[in-house]
Image 1 (spheres, rainbow, N blue to C red):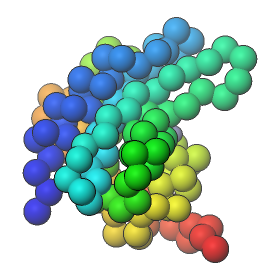
Image 2 (cartoon, protein in one colour):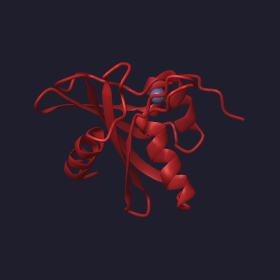
Image 3 (spheres, rainbow, N blue to C red):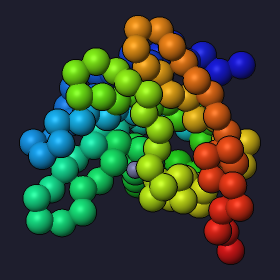
Length: 129
Ligand code: ZN
């Protein structure tokens, strides 16, 4: 059983650091590695080149620290209050490099709503070598 309470708090905290002068859509996430360490991420927009999403920030932080196996990710997002926010297509494919098909993706929104999907549900028939 994954204790998602700490993931919710860390994702919400990370969301406060989102750099979103263009969309004002702030996303935060918390990635639980198999080591037990939790990596946070927020989206970082850019006027000139492609912005980077919270999920890929968290994954690249973890991977650069030597992590290779992951237990779960939790995502929160919205302009003002939290609305239902799922990883974008780019992030789904990115995650599939490191995560199994049954990797749990939690979406936390409104006051206390939580939805869980597997990576397979979010990215059926994904491309993997
Ligand atoms: Zn994304």
